[in-house]
Image (cartoon, rainbow, N blue to C red):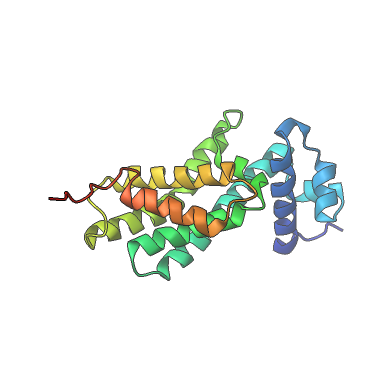
Length: 196
């Protein structure tokens, strides 16, 4: 008798796979390691995903979709555009602060062209949340007029860089403050008032 698949078991597999795949290169990952991390048998994984490639693909989509959903919720809770961006940066940085192993899922992987196409599509809700915050800021005259799509890509690039390069002595709140300051006000020095 075939066992029924459950969403709980599938999510446990995807969560374990996200840890294991991000810890080492794809070709070094063993399904046995994912099964061990999930606390299940190897055969169970193959009931849900036919190949390691299928599991990798599903894992990437799982990670990106989870983030997009959380970002939409946190963005709605803030009134000002700068606070929305601060909340977005805090969520992303906080999510990955101690788990940099998930970051490889947001990089392009030319070995999986179908995954690249899917990632571009799945990344859209994340970009849209940031774009909407930027557009709201332009509307309220908090920000000057910029291309919201380019602004969103720049913002997410800054967040990703801080995730990759923060040190153990950095504090999340400080990095978010610096990121928002640079993004909203720029890195240029403000003109000082002339003295007579």
